[in-house]
Length: 178
Image (cartoon, rainbow, N blue to C red):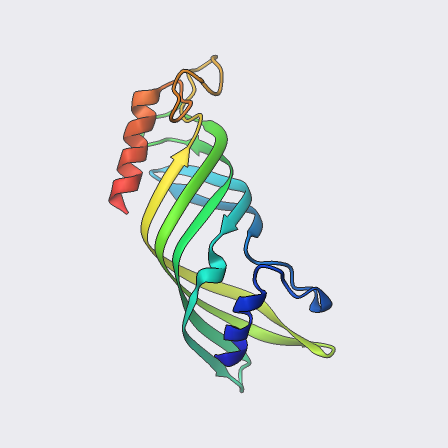
C-alpha cells in the first residue's frame, strides 16, 4: 500500500526515468461502450482528477504475481470527441458525432493485474478494472443532426443540436438515471 500510495505524488509529472508518463491528466485514444441501445465511442480523451484518489486496499499474491487494488476517486472530468451509431431508444437514424465533456463522481475502481519483471523493472501486465460510478453528468454536443442537414446547429446554444428537445431529453434521462 505504501508503494502504490507513493505514486500518487508522481501522477501529474510521471516518472520519466522509468518511462511512466503523467497520469493526471490521463490521455486515452478511445473507449467504446453501448448506451441506450447505441454504440458510443469516445476518442481523444483527456481525463483529469485521477490524482485525487484514495487507496482503499492493496493486496499482492506473491505466488501468482497478482496485484489487486481498490481506489476511490471523488470526481473525474473527461473531454474529447464522441461518435454515436445505431438505434437510440429503438429509434434509427440518429447517428451523431461531436465534442463532449463528462463529469463522474463517487467512483470506486477495483483492479487486478499480473506483475511482470522486465529487466531491472516490473510492469503491470493485463489489468482488469471494474468501475462503480455514483453520478455521471454527460454533455454531448451536436447530438441528432437532421438527415441531410448540418452536424451541429449553433442556434441551440447549450447542446448545438439540430433536434434540441430530443437532445435535452436524452441528456436529462442519462444524467438523472445514474
